[in-house]
Amino acid sequence: MANHARFVGRTVMVQSGNVEAAYGALSRLLAQDAVPEAVRRSRYREPPCRARRRRAFEACRRLYTAEMARRIAFLARSGRRDPWLGC
Image 1: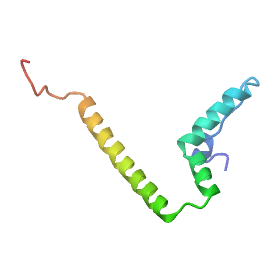
Image 2: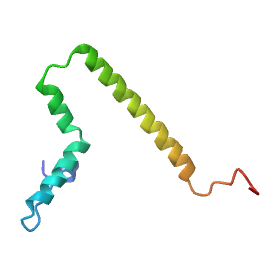
Image 3: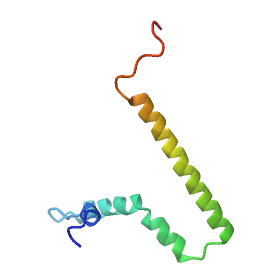
């Protein structure tokens, strides 16, 4: 289990007794994996209408971020010819 890539990538080491910095790093890692939101959602029952709305919002956000990443990658690629020569 300790050699599993996901486990090693999510391991936080306490260096020279600095527990506060390690706690902050752990909090950031958990927030990236959306663990606090999942815990808050599972604490209480989510009505079906809110669950549908949340899932639709998350799907829209995934599409938006994927499209924006595609556009940024298109604009940031190297070796692209200038579309407006002489401007």
